[in-house]
Image (cartoon, rainbow, N blue to C red; front, side, top):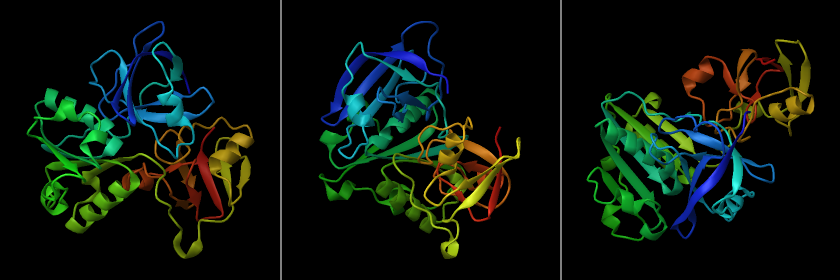
Length: 317
């Protein structure tokens, strides 16, 4: 991965737990342009790599991220909250696995810090004069970022747990029955997303209409009848080299240990950086980033997914 040095040019508190950080290039050309829904990888000083959605207007020169200070963090959010104006860090070019799609109508559902990519989407949809509705859910107004920016927009509905129960999210009303002209976008904590996805399925929404980005580990996926959990062999089509993947190691772990230059970032199956193509074998998909169509085409995440078959052949040099 190519890293670019960036400087913190602004830092503010959106809530007691959420820091808004603006980054600008240290030297050379401007940052690459991006589209709403994109994220960047940030290389923390300790060597951690974390992904943060870009939440500023896509046309602005700087990159803006909003970071929740997670008590159970493995170190990334604490390091980001410790940043001061003038500090430097390294970032990747933007990548987008959560883009706006072509549709007549857009329904957006944000849970807590999941507002970050959806805020950029709202700005782009406003610019395009597209029809949309944003539902923003949080435990309280005081702990929800960007409320002031969104307040007064009749296309935005707030749902706060500690306010009037009548304004809480009602998916029968706020999502409703499937419409072929409507795209749905969901982002937030696991519990929030799982609730919405189950409700959408119950209401009959087809998977291709649902677009999601998860902040955190994907849900654990078990293979049928206990399969897909043991050791298997991964073969590289380009060299014929074979490596045993034990049940307690990932494909990515084994490849890196054997000197294979494999792409990776989140190591959780949620960012899409490590996706490669399966040429032979039966993959056990355990990511939360690929669509069913992409899986059917043979795409595979080496950081989180495994195999049902004894051998999995990958298109990786």
